Image 1 (cartoon, one colour):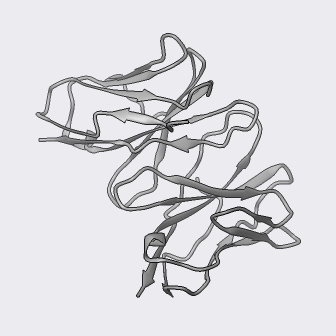
Image 2: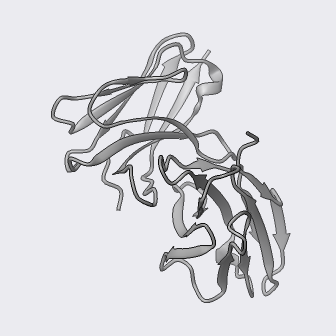
Length: 113
Length: 111
C-alpha cells in the first residue's frame, strides 16, 4: 500500500495561467476528497467523489475550479485563470466507503505570482 | 464550523507523555472523535478515532470522558518528531462526511 500520492508537489505559476493537479488515491479506495489549506489555517473541504461521481462541492469551489475523476481512480483538480488568492496547499484524501477514515496525500503547494 | 475547542499551543519535554485536550460539548450520539496531526509542510496524518470507549494503537491513546463532552489524546513517550499541529475533529463515521478542521493545537516537543 503506497498511500495517497499527489503530483506535482510544488507549482509556481503566473496570475492568469491554468494549472492542473493530480491525485492518486490508495488502491481500492472509492472515495476521494480535495481540500485546500492556506497559511496558518486548517484544511478546508473543496469537493468529494464517490467512484467517478462528484457528489458534493463547497462554495469555495468557484467557477474557475473543476475536478474530475473519470474512471473512478485518479482525480485531477484544475484551476483556470489563477489568482494570487489561489496560492495554497491543495490536499487530496481517500477513504474506503465501509470505514471512511480519510488518508491524506502530501499535498501540492501552489504559488501564484 | 468546527465543533471542537483545543488549546492553541502546548509544550512537552522529550520522553514525557504529551496530553492534548479537546472539548466537544455538542457532540451527537453517532459522532466519533478523530485525531489527525500535521507536521510542517506535510499532509495531515490520521492518528486515531473513537466513539465512547478508550482506544489505543501504535501511535497514541484516546481517552473519552463518560459524558463524551471532552477527550484527551496521549502520546506516551513524545519524541522531537511528534512536533506538529494536532487536530481534533468530530464527525459521523459512516457515510461520506467531510472533515471540518479547526485551528488545532501546535505541540512543540522540547529536547
